Length: 346
Image (tube, rainbow, N blue to C red):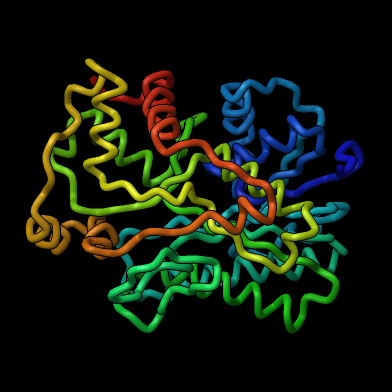
């Protein structure tokens, strides 16, 4: 076992949904944690989310202001750190004039963190990538995606997914050509569910929130694998220290595909009267495609219609002894946390 008491870990983007769960897990394991924020005005917000997660002692937690779009403070951020969890990612713009507005910040941010980590003699960086870098742009796929797969960036895919792919590829190229002794692992989560700790949460949670509030009247015919954020955090820590993880990618997924209607059925079955507004039928594909022409927020969703989304989590299970919660438990935990924090409009 790694002796965590004298190890410092940098977590980038500490206010983010996955990042704050990683911080919580690291503190519980006894690590000293430094985390970056674009503005230190969010420091109390992060501490409050950790309190919601059950952690109230912050002697081993420190904050530093750093932005992925600037070189400022990154040398100081990584100084003295044994490991870096690079979780931060530029927020995807709903409206943009050119895909490079998403691609360039993602790529440059990853390289900025890797260069600083190499120069500071960090042992290993764990990069939070995405299923979007694995399973997009493949027609007629019939077998589960694995870590050997890469998204086809030459196909007609959303710029956000292209940006995740190019950023991860740039990271691996950097390690190969300029990384020196720096080690790298990558985590590629599918749709992330699980308990939220504050107002900052994932696209998947927003879908559940909209279902519970009755904003979604019918479910788009979209399929996805899911994973719990607590299990994603566990996988980051395993990839950080396990000898088998160096130089490897790991899909974070239960391996079980659900349709949006399946998610709705779980909510109605498990939440009773709290889920009375959850939809019971599916939306014809043509309606979503037509709506996406007028509503930019629907365009990435529309590209997922009819996509094969099965992904295998066997590598992480076999190599790292990682065993995730069930989809159903994760989805219910998502809904319960939304109610607990008062984020569901009556």
